[in-house]
Length: 308
Image (cartoon, rainbow, N blue to C red; front, side, top):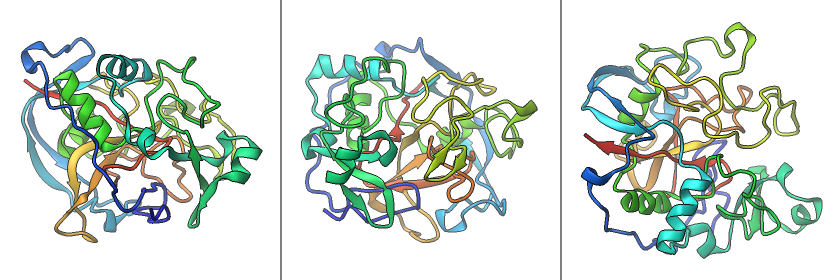
């Protein structure tokens, strides 16, 4: 495995895919989908992408273009540890991180002893390859989600999210749906709530404050993940579309750097609690990057969508 293959400065990939997860193909169909924690987004045209100089042209953020989206449902927040536990209890599914026996964890979240034993990613040494790290042990075998059931599930690969969606009778959102929903009815604003990062001095998202990667002042109240319904929702009633955790989309990744797309790379959107404007301000609505379908980290999660 080439753990130092980096599609962007803030996302790490397992590298060569050695297996594919067993997808759960059966679902109850949309008629039986529980839409209680979903919002109906009325279809329409919107301006997708950005020409902002803060963007990353090689990521394919621009140019701004008009895109039409049909009506769809989307989860009000990311899938939580509690939600994912129900899926595991129902199916016995084994995630990619559990199959591999390890996943990537931010260095400040593990003990000094564990950090000394772990392999580091050469280009981003703040990422450690931690044995036993997975959705139920986010920082390794000696950690637990016991007090984080309302936090977004992490260490889930695209394969894992597809399996969960199939079980729930839902699907991952397309990238266009994700951005349309994230904008909350606003036109070409930088964030889901507008152009100002901290309106009236208040925090609206969970990102890194301080000096990355060594000093996090935690001014927003969190070092790692925040509960999935933290901070004010956007205009459509959706939570945490900037920061907290990256969110998988169904699309293959395409950009100016990869103009035809690559099946092994899938789009992720929204940024995470590790994003900082000094190196990765990808918590903007138009920002995007990618990862391989079997990759997992402590800052990638997902939310579901469903057809009307």
